[in-house]
Image 1 (tube, rainbow, N blue to C red):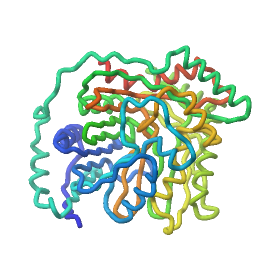
Image 2: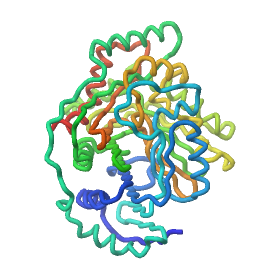
Image 3: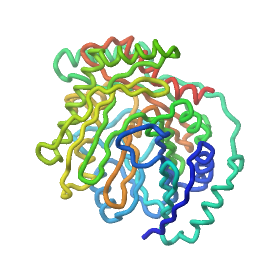
Image 4: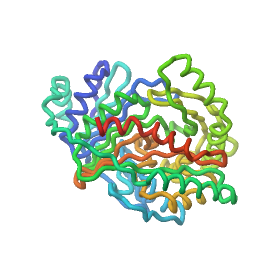
Length: 431
């Protein structure tokens, strides 16, 4: 049971920083921020969850069954993540590439304290064991000075490439040969940028990343010594009652400073045959995934190839929805569509096998999903892209970027798109 208390409050940038600074005292922290981005399917302006009462942490073997049991027995708020490598629990696949980050494959926790923000109100939900701290916590947050959080001296960080530029071109050309042979139609090929033996200030880095990106699915995640600083523009999957919605992104164009030129870039992206074909192929893949658990005849495409603009890039986004019977568990819905089509390819299993062969690093949390379950079994998860991942104990920091390779792909253009996507993370780490 939870004690619930509401306060009228405007969620300002200053309050966000106070909340996150106050939250650093806990071992488990998840902060989800919409950045006031207008979206049809949003539920909250922001959510903060801290301090685990119970948790589930596991590798990929039997991961979905463990999460399913945990979610149904708990019937409470749960926050956490699913790494890309849970693909090995869904299909007969493996992950043998280098892993410098060492995140557990799956981690979810039941927080003692949850803060749900709307535009002008916060609802605090505290488990009974800590409900006597509710008023004092809010008073402490209201008066919290962010300078109270220790700030280590910044280090000079040298970003290294896991995959050299020449090797990237060779691997993309190999993927194109797979496409020519008919092994796949499309695959998302990614590369890692990393630095070893470094210390960063995770909160300061997240605030910087969020400031320059302002995405609708921003996330700050802290589990002990593991951190994810996420500026994702993409929703993976959301369930509200019997309705399930997926919003894959495929298609990218850079933002331009000149408004008229920027508008032309939007028009070019919307009409680009390669970008549209990428998006439509993944839309079909998502429709197929959802059809496994949907009520018959309920899968539909609500929006196809819609252009949305963010601080760094324009993106092409489609929206696919369906209805699901109450007999299908929330975790089963996720399992049948995981990993998300936008980060794999088509056909899905073949694409994932080729991705594993050609990429040089284990994806881990990158291209997985972070989000939450509500007490009534609804959920909302993002796609972990445009993110800095950090293992404080190993002193290893990393970000990865990628793009869809199709028959029309030009390796040089794909590489340039990767650099555009990597710009914000690199700026944060090297500034």
